[in-house]
Image (tube, rainbow, N blue to C red):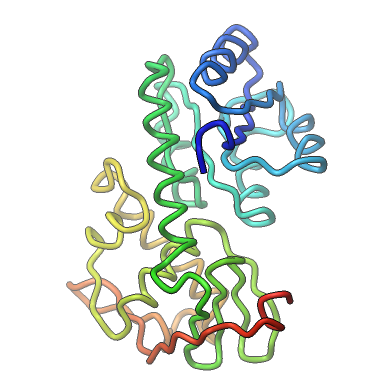
Length: 247
């Protein structure tokens, strides 16, 4: 994918920031659609799917945190927050619910472009492993890495966010290995990961609530005290058939 193929949705109520930023990103080769608020963003998403969303946190009406939940749970889209300096708590909450990165206003546009490229590279690596068309099978569960679709042992699709997907892939690529927080953060979060080590704990908790019979007594994603986390399952890579790839 070249940058001329990358579609960005820029959601910010400040026209004085949004419009010149959209022009700059367009000059960098991106295809940019603007939205002044969450309502307009939702309407745009009914018509087209961007590759990444740039999202302001503080907006009138529905705020960026609420829209972010919709983007990562329902649409599994990468999200970069645009935040004010005083919103440290909101930034942490945003990362914990699945946002991929953030930049603090005022920011250097070239830095934002670098962050966009970094997030898209991480998303690309997660969705295209070495055997990109091979399914992960473990304890009756199935993860399709191309469609980012997780299916439970009864065949029910379990929605997961892009951050949860990356975390699960990290576990599946290293079954029965203890992965400490620093390593997991490096795999799934990237920049300034040490500032947000609790983000891993929260993402693990979210996965457990979706995958464990009793999230308080997890048997699949186990805590190794003082060490980190471990996927307590054997994992098989199974090549998809032509029929299964169309489902």
